[in-house]
Length: 414
Ligand code: SAM
Ligand code: TMP
Ligand code: ZN
Image (cartoon, rainbow, N blue to C red; front, side, top):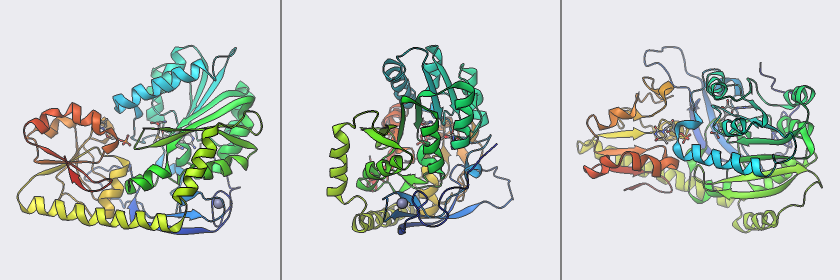
């Protein structure tokens, strides 16, 4: 099923072959969403999680990338629709795209990484021709049940050619939190250049390097985030496939993301925000080693403070439970060495994660009902990007004296 192409640079930067300078090392890490049966005895897959910046094209990337098939397979457990906020977000995105890029006669939309159909469900309900491409079969079964057409596959240049032959050009290729997860980026962009109609656009949202550095979001670094995008690196990447970055909108999703719009070179005038964001990135020294070293120092401080706090709380006889068995939490728990001695278990609403243990540190995962049974003294919020939604849902926890621990941008209790 997978067609991971072999035509990317094999040394240096995975985009351009340039020299990559390492700037952040998170050590030995497991596959972030490889939740395990507590009784499993087979060895876990570990890799060296370190990030570097390309001195030529500025793409921030992992030095060792985990093969896509090990992360994204039939049983990939992440379900986009687990958050009410994200359901509203993607319904809004779909409505906006229906009113703009998909407003012409017989439009065709392709989504890369449609997961459980959180975005395409609205497109399908509007009767618009569409196709989701995603290798995670269990998740796509949910999408299909909602009327979404899916090709269970990895999107790449070869897939794009087949879709073009079978369905014609796409007016829109959309993707959220997926493009940065694909090691073979060149193939994805050549695929987009192949599949797009002459005036079509490739719109994708991904976490923004600027927000990650500003807020010391070190836990946004995990296996799936092969790249941390910025306007400068995405602009250079698009240009390599005859495409052009024409739009970049900062959005308050997952701690701060950018929605990039890419068109065929010369097809649409670039928005003024691109030059503004490029100037901001330059001023901030976003890709400069000093900036990145400051981030590493903050990350090390967070580790020291968080481990001290958890040890003190346990020593004082307090119970601490985690909330959200996120991919991010794999980085936090493995980098900080947080096991069941410090955090009793982690609550998560995803049925496919419950009853299993977290990768590497083996914290048990329980349904949210276990949270109140009885309430712990402190809850460590791993799903901090859903803080508002989770704290509102669990308001009774604070009302009876419970406290939330957050660890970014620094360790604090609320
Ligand atoms: N778009 C959803 C969202 O924003 O919540 C899902 C994001 S999830 C983190 C990433 C999804 O991308 C997974 O469902 C995964 O199976 C899919 N994926 C990974 N590599 C892919 C590829 N090369 N082509 C298409 N989908 C891919
Ligand atoms: P994410 O940060 O990668 O989107 O993952 C969020 C995780 O948190 C996911 O496993 C679902 C879980 N979660 C809950 O347990 N309760 C909630 O209310 C929300 C919004 C998420
Ligand atoms: Zn490069």
